Each structure stands twice: as C-alpha cells, then as structure tokens.
Length: 346
Image 1 (cartoon, rainbow, N blue to C red):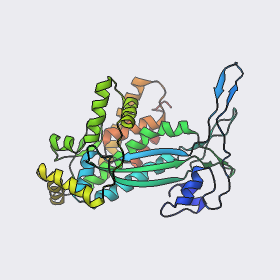
Image 2: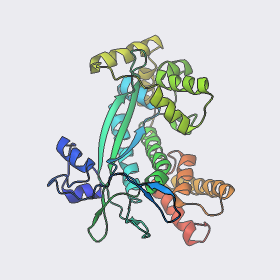
Image 3: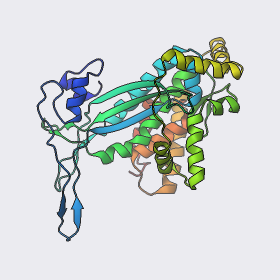
Image 4: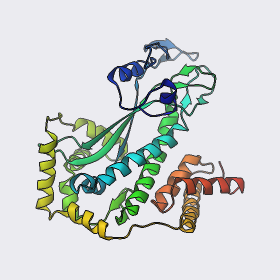
C-alpha cells in the first residue's frame, strides 16, 4: 500500500485481501468502519425538469504505468533486473506527484477540497494478455486508487475524479522522464519513441513487432472499424481481449527466449553493450539548461493551444521535451522561477 492516507491508516507492506475489500467498500481497512457513505444510483428530476441519474459508489480507479516495449524486453528477456527497480522507482515518483492533486468531493455547491492524500494498492505484472498462445513481455504496474480521502478537518470523503483525469498525462510524463534518466544512468542509449516514450536503442522493427502481437491486434481492430484515437483504442482493447491463460512463469519465459533467439538474441546484446558503455551523468548546469529549454518549449506550445494553461500541462510538455535530460525537481524549479517572474499565464 502507498499514499499519505495509507500511512495514517497504518498500512505498510503488501496488499492484504481483507484490507483491499474494505477500502473498495469505502470502509476503514483495519476496523471495517464505514467511512464513505454508500450511495446507490437513483433517478430524480432536477430544477430544470430534466431527469438525472445520480452516481453510485465507485470502488476506485486503475492508473496503469507501462514500460516501453524495448524497456520490457531488456528487463524481462535480457535479464537486467536493475530496470525492474528503475520502473518501480519511477512509478513511485509519478504516484507521489499525482497524489498532491488529490481532491475530496464535498457535495452541493461547495468546491472540491485539495487533500493531497490517498490510498493506493500497486500490482506489478510482466506480460500482456496472450494472443494466440503468446504472452508478450510487458512490464507494467496497476495502481488501484481507492475512492477515499481525508480533508484537513479529518473528515473522510470520496475522491473528486476530475482531478485524477486531469493529472493522468502529467503523471505519465513524470514516469517516463524518471525512467529515461535512470536508464541512461545504467549505460543504455535512449531515443524518442513513436509516441514520445523513452526507447532503448538496439532493437530491430521486426523483433519489436513480433514481440507486440497485442498491439497489432488492437491496430487491426481499429482499421477494420475505421476508428482512430486513444478512446477508440481503449474500446478496441476491451473488445479484443482474450481470456487469461494459465501459463507458468517458466513457460512464459521460454516463449520469450525462443522469440529472442529467432531474432538474434537482441536483448542480451543490448544488455552487454550497456555494461561496456559509461553511464551518462548530466552535470547540474546541463540539467538546468535542459529544464529552461523544456519550459520554453512548453510555454510556446501552451500559448498555441490556449491563453491560460494548467501548470500540469506545462510541466508535462517540459518533461516530455527533455526526456530525462532534466528531471522533475529541475523542471519544477524552472516553472516556479518563471511564475515568480510573471513569465507564465496560469
């Protein structure tokens, strides 16, 4: 368990089944006391005469952090366990940053209150759903955010979901920036992937595609139905999702190694090359310069979209632009400097 509210509840270590179940019901994970009042969905007529259906209690939300394919191959097939640690640490940084924006839903006409406290259960997996019997290597973490927080007065409330949605892309940028910096510190050469993700150099397109049958399955479904965009992709992922298969860890690993062997053992070659390459350590002045350049890019991009930009959008774009050359503390410091100098419109 993780989060400020988890610490207040005394939750540490691995997720316990009973605690998970209680939190899903809005209950205290230790005592079972009902903390968030359950609300069943009902229809009623609002002041304008429209029929409205109220929200029922939601257990929580799943924030998923997926390592880029080349990173998963290097960690899971190449056998560099340091990358697993780097992934976990990067997820932690992203979740801690995301938590600062957590808000409580107060109700009525009262604005939501920023609490900066939540409870999160993390589950790490190392393969995607099988496609035609092949479970591709995919290092990813599901962070289950429970629908409960605590106000400054000590009242427990349900979360305001809008702020979670607004923070998702920013949290992904934080995760990728942290991961890129850590990978370079291990000696890996990084390049910008198709979707802006940090990709480890040294893999052929053929091997990457062969190791991503699930992605190709979703792309084929989108093309068949003439759909595009992330929302359509999410729907396609749901419709093409096959049943889970009871493959043992050894069976899955044997599949991965066989695929790697068929493509020249690229993961092992990438790991060996990284071990022989000096790690990249940016000097402080280099990080500061990168942060300044990243924020300038973010500011120009933000001004093209709208006159007033949310700080998360600016920080997100700056992190994406620098891709590990400047990390969150440098980006945040540069952001604060420009706000103080009245260079940013918020």
